[in-house]
Image 1 (cartoon, helix red, strand yellow):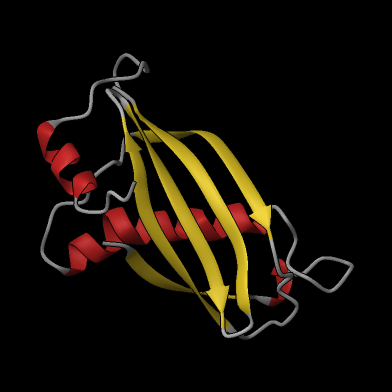
Image 2: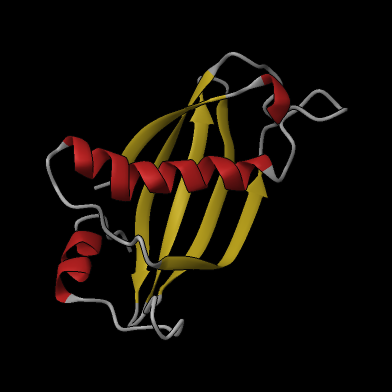
Amino acid sequence: MRFKTKQFIRWDDLDAFGHVNNAKYLVFVQEARIDMFWKSRVQAGLKPVFDDMVVARAEVDYKIAITQTNQDFDIEIWVSKIGGAAFDLEYKIFSSAGEHAHVKTVQVAVDLVTKKSRRLTEQEREILNGYLEN
C-alpha cells in the first residue's frame, strides 16, 4: 500500500528559470512525510509516530520540470526497506503532466536523550510493514 497526499506549488517555489527549484523537492517530500506519520494519524485519532527520526540520506531523480504555480500535484510514499534502526522511503511526485521526480530517503530513529540511533519498535515496524513494497 502507498500513502497518497497532495502538495501545492507556491510562487516562491519557483527559481529564476521559472521552474520549481531543486531544493524544494525535499521540502515537498518532508511535508508529505509529516502528513503520513503525523497529520493523517492525528486526523484518524491515532498517535503520531517517528517524531524522533532524522533523514540520513536523500536522493532525487528529476524527470519533468514543474513550471506552474497555483497547481496541485500528487505524492505517493512507500517503504522500500526496513532495517534495525533505519528505514528507506521512496516517493513519486507526479501530476497530469507525468512523473516529475522520484525521491529516496533514509530515515534513522533517534533516542532524543542520547542523540544516538535506536532500534525501531515493534509498533513502528508494524506501521512500516503496512507500506512495504519490494
